[in-house]
Length: 204
Image (cartoon, rainbow, N blue to C red):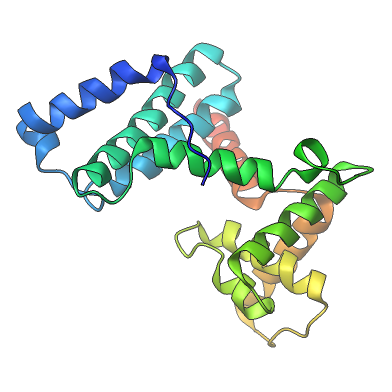
């Protein structure tokens, strides 16, 4: 694993988090599981800031996401599992490995080829030998529509038959497949529709 020292800018945050774990009763009693909802909430708030196009808000929300990363890494370091340096080194090594057209000798012609290479390198690094392993690796914690679209992309790419479904499941699968073809993220589309409905009813 490539070892990279964390930038000086993040050191004050790490120091604050370490002190909080020692001196604040609430912070000291937290676990990875107890603050799991915080990670999800902060990620969604950052996504909302992106949707609004508000750079000031996005800067703030990204800070909250970073706090969650540091919080988890600090707790892991306390039990000698891994450190923030390990987290950063790991993702740096992954980025270098999965961009051989930038850091190696590979040639690509467009962004689609970049994505294909990324998936192939990912599958090889994880030792996947078939579609089932790829599908099982898709996070089960993803929102249902997001996971369905990801599953369908891999299933359709492999051109394998899918089980016959009825009712809403069938309708959702058809919708997800059409959204994939059109390059639409259903989770984002649903959020936009919800906001439009709220705005439309605000004057009622």
